[in-house]
Length: 509
Ligand SMILES: *[C@@H]1O[C@H](CO)[C@@H](O)[C@H](O)[C@H]1NC(C)=O
Ligand SMILES: *[C@@H]1O[C@H](CO)[C@@H](O)[C@H](O)[C@H]1NC(C)=O
Ligand SMILES: *[C@@H]1O[C@H](CO)[C@@H](O)[C@H](O)[C@H]1NC(C)=O
Ligand SMILES: *[C@@H]1O[C@H](CO)[C@@H](O)[C@H](O)[C@H]1NC(C)=O
Image (tube, rainbow, N blue to C red):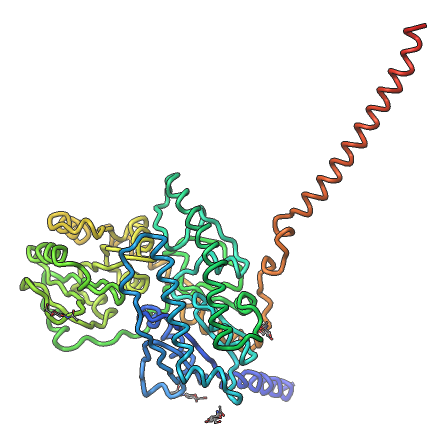
């Protein structure tokens, strides 16, 4: 019995050890720090677990201790920052154009060309950002399974390719910021937006990425749409406590929230002293990595500084330049800060943020009330959710007037309800069997263990559309119904005729 057990144990060990050294290719092509920082903990963890990870990234971590992590820098100078003020649809079109063009440029890089052309390189798994889908071609190239990942929620177009339910009223896209009781105008706009992005995806984006794939990988690849739908699982950076509730097929895994529970980087001595000495408390102000604070024009910036100047709090401003005109004494600027440590400092009173998902999540878990000044993409929605859920306030870019700003700041700091709400919600969010990071790693290794054969593909993908909308069923039932109708009418007519015919002679005789 013991022997059998030991042999079984040994077999099990051999079975699992096959994957101790899986070779994984990870690709986050989006040239935005927030996309990189959201996924780095996963690559780091995979490499520490003994996998050989090759990471194509636009912001390498360059940590010499991570000996199993090889990083290829694919940074491409981008124009994302020029985007933020155009209208809704134009911003959407421009952003996705720029991102597609940056993929095209990245694929021309010699190191990536080496990968595309190499004949002796091999990988057991490709993990890539689903919203820049051309990189799924690598899974075909290396004949291995693929996993899609998004650093935000994902678009209705992708949900639809994966056979997941979409609905513009129940689950509006993350580009839209509707409060829970949507007006009829919100709903009309949501439907227009939905139809627009579905059409844009099908007739502009997909052909564009298909072209990019053919140019760099060759014409003998299956259609890109097929390669995307062939992914084993899709990891999405959402969690149902703080984001909208929506149905997900079992192959779509929410990994939100928990990715940020890694040990925070320490504060520098200088910063630690300033925060420790802020005995009335401090406000942390940061507009994230894409919306550089210098983009606020002079008038708005002066209004903000004037509002800060009269407050009793120290203000820590993450600002892209090391000098700022008209800076009051209580405002300190830093070009870079260990954000998680700042948010977790006991003296923090408030976080004024652009509402980027990573920043909001970090502040939520640190129980810091927020004021959101959204600029683009998902930020409007994130800020609306913080208002709806009662842990933050919204401040429009056009409302940055001194008095109004001060009142909003004082409300957020002095009213305890925001902090109480955060404690309630994080208590729920923390009460889960696994953190987001653990869930991501578990699913990645699950796909590796079963070489992609995990059978979680939504049946919607493989069903013809006439069956999906049961058009054939309706058609057949209609034919039967019409047939029966015709037969009954004929019988009725014959019966009537018969009665009529058989009665007539009696009348006339
Ligand atoms: C690298 O991977 C090996 C197994 O392949 C593992 O034993 C080792 O601990 C890993 N090293 C680091 C620093 O992650
Ligand atoms: C593949 O071959 C190239 C030279 O042709 C070599 O430099 C490289 O190390 C090889 N890679 C692997 C994984 O064997
Ligand atoms: C789909 O993925 C499986 C492995 O997960 C692979 O064997 C198959 O070749 C892929 N199909 C295409 C069209 O790439
Ligand atoms: C920083 O501010 C100075 C003075 O206002 C200005 O000349 C310079 O262009 C700014 N640098 C950046 C990176 O914005």
